[in-house]
Image (tube, rainbow, N blue to C red; front, side, top):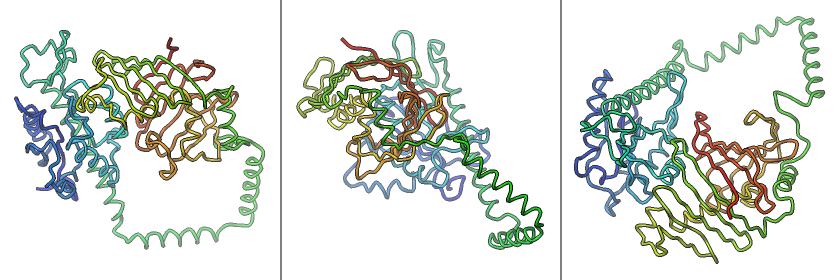
Length: 486
C-alpha cells in the first residue's frame, strides 16, 4: 500500500531520537494511539513510516540517501521534539528533519500549504514532549524557516515537574497546561486530516485544470486567439480615437503625479540613502573603533524570558555575551581571535557540555555577528558582501510610510555565515530622518522585525525594542528590549 496521494511512499513520517523511546516506550505508544485515531478519521488507510530500530547515530555502513530517499517522500513529517532532538549531530536531525525540509521545499506542493479554510499550515507537524530551551527553539525555527507551532504533550506542575504527557495520568488536573492525552491525539489527527484533505483538493484541481473540456490545451488557446482577432476587427474608428485619448490621459497622469500604484519615485540611489541612514545612527563615524555594552532581555511568546549582557569592541574584534535564564547560565566570546566559553562557572567545559549548550566555535562566531548587528546593523550590512540594490521604493511598513533598501545575497561574496540566513534583507527607513523602522528577511528564515524607540550607546543609535514576527502568519515570535549595561 502506497500513500493516499499517488507519487508518495508514505502519508506520515515519524522522526524521533531513539533515547526518547526507551523505558516506557513513549513514542511507540504515541504512534499506536495515532494509528487508532486516524482509522476513525479517514475512510482510506493511512500509511505511517515509523522505524523502531535503534540507530540514533549514523553508521559507516549506512547509505543514508538511498535508505531514506523513498521513505522521506511523505506528505507529512512529524518530529517528536524532546530535550535531545534539536541536536545538529544526531541522525534524526541531519538525515530526517533537514532532508525532509529540503524535499518538501522543492516538492510541487511546497512545504507550506493553503488549507481549505484559507489558513496556511506546514507539512512539518511537530509534537513537543518537553519544554525546549530557547536555543533549541531558535535552531528549529532557523532550519525550518517558520515559527515553531507544536502539538504539546507536556505534563507540567507547579512543583517543577515537566515530562511527557501519559495516556493515564494519576493526577491529570495538576497539569498546568490543562491538556489531556486523548484530546491532544485527537488534535493531531484533525491537523493531519486538514493537511491531507487540502493536498488532495490541490491535486484534484491540478488534474482538472489539465483535462478540462477534454480538449488539448493548444487547441483551446487557438480558439481564444481566433475569437479575439474577430472581435478586434469590429472596432470602429470612433472607438479607436476614444481609446487613444484614454491612453494619452493615463500617460499624462503618470508623468504628473509622483505616486504610482502606491509607490513613490525616489530620486536618490540605494547607496546614497544608505550613507544618510548610517550617518543618522553613527553621526561621529565611530564604528571602526567602537566599544558598546548593553543589557538585553528577550521575552518569548510563551512568557519565558532570558537576560544577556553583550559587549563588543570592533577594532579589537572582541565579543562577549553573558547569558542567564532560569535554566541556563553561560558566557561565550572571542578575544584575540580565540573563542572562550564558561558554563555555570566552569571555564573548561568538556565536549559534551559544549555541544549541549551550543558553544562550539562556529556557533560563537555566528552569534558574534548576530550581536554586532544589534549595535550596527547598517554598517555590518554594508560590509557583509550582500548586494545593495540601486532601486529604492516608498512602501508601507508597520503602518508607516518608509523607504525600502533591499540587499540581495550572493554566496560568492558573503563574508559571514550569519548573512546566509536569508536571500534578501529589506531595511525600512523613515523618509524624513532615515531612522530605521524595521527589517524583513526572506528565504530560509522568513521574519520581519519592527523597531521602536532609540537607545544611544556610546554615540551609536540602536533600537530600544525589536519585535519579531513570522512573515507567513504574522504571529509573534519574541521581543528584544535593550538597556544600558554598567
